[in-house]
Amino acid sequence: MDFPIIGIGTYKVKPQPEINFLLENAFRCGYNMIDTAEIYRNQKYIGAYIKNIDRSKIWITSKISFANYKSDNLDEIIKSLNKTFIDLNTDYIDLYLIHCPIEEWNGKIWNLLRYYQKEGKIRYIGVSNFNYEKLTKFIREIGPEEAKNIFCNQIEYNPFLNRKDLIKLCQDNNIKVVAYGSLNKKNELIEEIAKKLYRTPEQVLLKWGQQNGAHIIPMAQDAKYIKDNICLDFEIPEEDMKKMNELNENYSRYEKYL
Image (cartoon, rainbow, N blue to C red; front, side, top):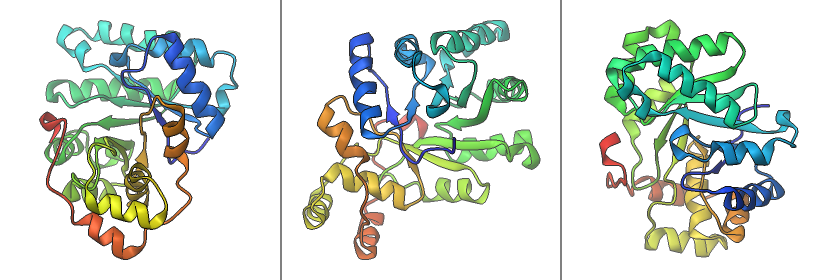
């Protein structure tokens, strides 16, 4: 399966009934990518739901928890990594990310994930929450040839946080951008464009990310919003894209990753 352009975010979604509701509605609407992480503490619920679904039709993204780094014990990290496969009821994970940069661990975790990739247990590996400085240092640390294996950088990204320098760095190194926080903020311009296009403001914000080349992982727990978020079969006119591209104000809900 190729990397889907849109997936369903699962942050804060648990326990089992909520996961069941989310995934049932998501799959019905056409989603086939699930974005989760060890630190979300919902992987076993996801695994329980998908165990009877054809694995080849689902893309699973997970992330190795930065909480594990505090143990300063690689064996503990390996143990937690192996638990992810058990919890998700899967022999392989499509995309595994370093959840956030911690410089003294980045290289070690990368090498560990590369080992699992060579063993066929992980298809692609990438990073998450790496800002311009952290990503530049990481590319320098592992070297340009090894950096070709960085599949993506999952970052907070929307018109109010357009991160032009970081986006260009990713593009220059063929690193895909995966956007979270697409719906963090809206304003009158977004409302006006949505009204003109007969779409919701949320759809306009998500489409902006898509048209700028990002993959998106919106979160929703209401059946209507789950459906709306994937109905992006429209285009934002160029003049409106230009206006949205000028909205940047470095607004972030996760400033520690800027």
